[in-house]
Image (cartoon, rainbow, N blue to C red):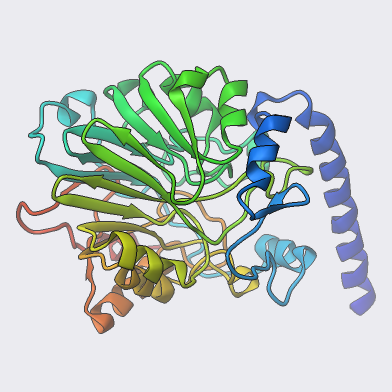
Length: 378
């Protein structure tokens, strides 16, 4: 039995090596891999103090794998049977079009979650699109990546109204999507991205004048909005040779009398409390809550940590994101929102849990709080 398992493991490892080699060859052909920062950009990165030997660093020591190996994680993901790892069918979803997203009051504060982390924020009379992964397929080799739960998203990229700014938290495929960006580049005023990510956008034909590359604590004005890049605890990379070659970020959006925080991806850390002290309180925090695992505890929060982080930044309302679209970890597809709901009730945090495509308007009546994910049964 032990010999058989060892043989299977070696076979799988061999297949992984073959796939990695094939991927390396494919990297030179697919535009999905994006571009590379220039020498001048790298010199700028070095002046930040957290870009060392060609890689960005976190504020505190952070391991990609905590007490495990990549081979073990791959084995478990492929073969470990986790009950409810995928939903039995499509999730409840409300279809939208551009007409339902225009002509609103400039004082409106509203967010519409499209699944995973993709969200549309309406604030101060402006349209802000967050980590818009709106394609069905993820990455350059779709059969290697998770399938989207639903056969479509609540609104297609072509249906979106003009966007004032797109915020990108980091360059992983489930947050920075090639197809979506190419469709957005003609209707977006500004792309706000972490250091290094501009190279990908340039490679995809986005006008340089429309790109703002921000280091942590840098800001940009969009009309009456202030958009700030703030720290996160994560990593980056779209290929085999560019791990941490670009930075990662959380985001703060401020309008007169309104403030919203988006965590991006990342592990729990003291940066949340620092952001709360410096920029809070927030009317709303969109918090990463899903795709967690003890194997990567430093780079993705457990649901209970996500709730605590929303309290740390001093958010009045938390909206869990980074779930509801793809399975990227060994936990039930709705386990994150179940655990977050329990933690929010225990800690006294207000949680809103809209369906995909259901707008959440702050300060205008009851928030969506139906436990709809419990009705999606096996």
